[in-house]
Length: 271
Ligand SMILES: Nc1ncnc2c1ncn2[C@@H]1O[C@H](COP(=O)(O)OP(=O)(O)OP(=O)(O)O)[C@@H](O)[C@H]1O
Image (tube, rainbow, N blue to C red; front, side, top):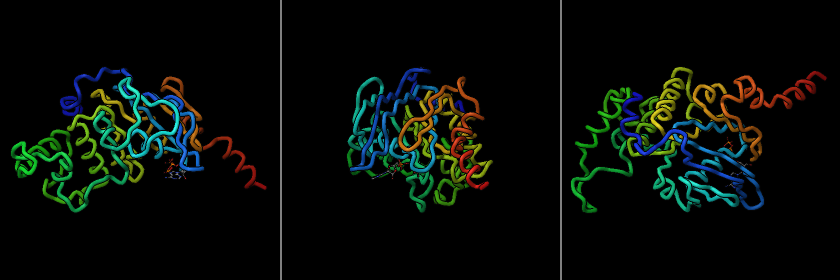
């Protein structure tokens, strides 16, 4: 599986090279400040985990990187070039692929159709050339098989796959189409232990193939299994920023659980 992802990954990726850098990035929505002073780095061949509770600003951060919203302040560079994305297309053109938790897949559409959605193969180069359905079915089937994703029938609606399988298809698809940065929005949030394990293996495979991965989650256990770098957001601010060697799973868990806040709550509840 790792080999197949590596086979498709961009050969120009150099492990450790900075792909995304943010410095002092902030976002205001009218009178609401959703993010403030965010410094963040996503390196090739590494997983940067962004942890945070509800309302911490995780979705806002994803939206800035994926081109859905533009940042209000600070600098955002991709491959060393400062950017302000005006649309998701601009982000994709820079090799940034986002796999959303609720997956932008069309549930009733066949697996192969979803795999090629927006990047269909046509029989010829002219705009209205007919779709090459046979080729797309064959390639989608081969690619998924090679990556160890076994779907019974490439013609079955994607909605019939398990949540974990759908996430893996989405990751495989992003890698196949040349993503350099993979943003995963709470990919394990709705999954059981076994399915989460499969998704985490794909995440690690994408990292090992040299992609820069942004792993958004509120689960420190999942983050620690694959992460090289950890950032915790609270109410739009970064409250922790550590490399793996600088933080233990226990510290990460305690920080996420809001150690001090929980202690105060326990004290109050005792009264
Ligand atoms: N379009 C918007 N307009 C106004 N306020 C917004 C908008 N989007 C987000 N916010 C606010 O910004 C803050 C951060 O929200 P965000 O959705 O980024 O957090 P989150 O960490 O993704 O939370 P969740 O896990 O609940 O999605 C919240 O206070 C939210 O209400």
